[in-house]
Image (cartoon, rainbow, N blue to C red; front, side, top):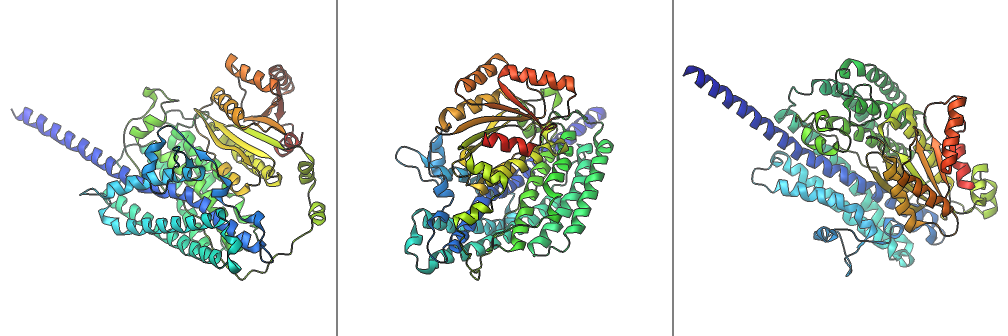
Length: 582
């Protein structure tokens, strides 16, 4: 009898432990919903920042007379209408304004992830025993600040789209809008910081992590050394202190080298160790955090922070740092996502078998993205307009080649598998693609399609004068997963069917670090491109090939009708410029 009692007692303890674990994981997931809200708002916020910056530029360039060429914003640049399956479900948000045909303005589609995340948080907060009760007042202030910024941004885009500047005496209304933006940008930043601190303190006190995922947590301690350093650096930059950049740069380089060295110490026993082709292994995500950071941040301390005359150097420096910091945060959140077996099982089912997935749940608190800094000053002398002859004389050789070329629509078909993170290949590509867009014209177009386990359209036939928007989209490209090139070509085919440049050159640029083997369906797509006079370029970013391999490589792709550029033989910048001017 005593044995049965002991057995029953043990069973009760085990049941209680399982229930407590489930409750703990559910609670941390609810905290992460707040982080997801902050991150979704950050995506909207950066577009709102560029709208405010563009209006500031428009006023600066209209100091002598109204120059309408500079008055544009996200609403005017994305002026089309969208319709998609189950779109009616999104009409519940007052910020979404459908027409009679159940179509919504294209620019409003970017709001939907933020609106859904806000709705989820508000629903959890409304529960009788909400997890958010302890920090509810802080959360309310954060929500109020983001709503205020949204409202004043709506005033800005309506001011521009309705051309109110034509009757705005001395731009008094525009200046009022920009001063309000500065106020609410600062308020959103302070509320974000306050909420983040409250979430971390609450989670650490009530829901410390379990002892499971030992290797992951050891690696996480190493990652946190870098994240804490970056956080301290960010605080000084926000306070306009750039004097310690060299010190922080040296520190993150040291932590980066140590972190990569400790990879084998922490993770050598984990499944998939040493396999770099899949971004779903813990080892790969750990390395991605460090290897990607090298190209994202190592340049920052020595940058000159080139800026417009109406933007403070400290503001430009801070925002350039934040852009890189947010990319690091995404790598950090990818790493800890593996500890939540419930959600990781769903995201990795495309590439891992059920037996390869650790379904244990030890949910960890994510990190939030930061938001940009915006400051408005009226005390800026107007610029002196240049005549067209002087502008042409100051063009670089590359810019002159672009000016003389026919309009080009370049469709980048980009390998976003995890191996692209190694040796800074992805970051190198981002840099040169962005530099090319910098010198391209409004008549030129860019599309970006990524492929890994699936394919996604990040940019679709966007005019190259939308440089800030394009730059931000390219910076968001994130590599993990395995390679599925067929899906990529299928997506490009669909894109070009509706967005082919009628007067000019359309070209597909396949960029990958490995060979690609075509099946009959993909070869058929290549044949269609060839028949439609759409050249396909294979830009090889992988390891150097010997003469024999190079010869076989070139013959293989020539037979396919594909033009090969090996970046071990030709500089990537030179290859892209050549394609853009042929």
